[in-house]
Length: 134
Image 1 (cartoon, rainbow, N blue to C red):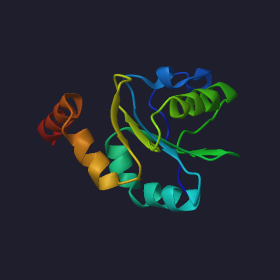
Image 2: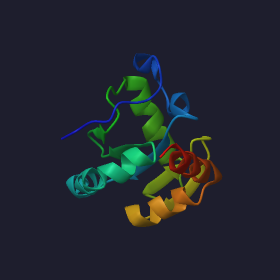
Image 3: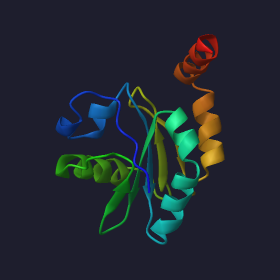
Image 4: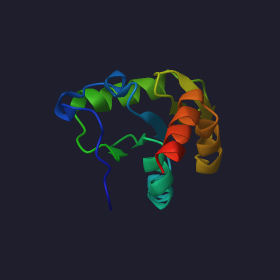
């Protein structure tokens, strides 16, 4: 199992999702059944996750699993609150780098989420800059 480092300085002081704004996109998954499947899928697509600056959180009643290196109690509470205020049936949420909700769904479909991310203006700029740097 590999964990990705957060690219923000002072990572130990991150207490809420808003502390990740402008640095990371976020995928929140409410996994009432079979969280191992969601975590396995996120690990399977770890290259795409890393390339798109995604931090993910898979939430069950008992725990939160994430690729965030250090999970503080404040961050865990922030993640749970974000999921609780979503409409019924929304168990997967994509949050953009600007902090806005970009997508909601009932299933973790990473190909769809990656496609959605790759259409975002900030991501298009990142890809252009990456191409120019090669």
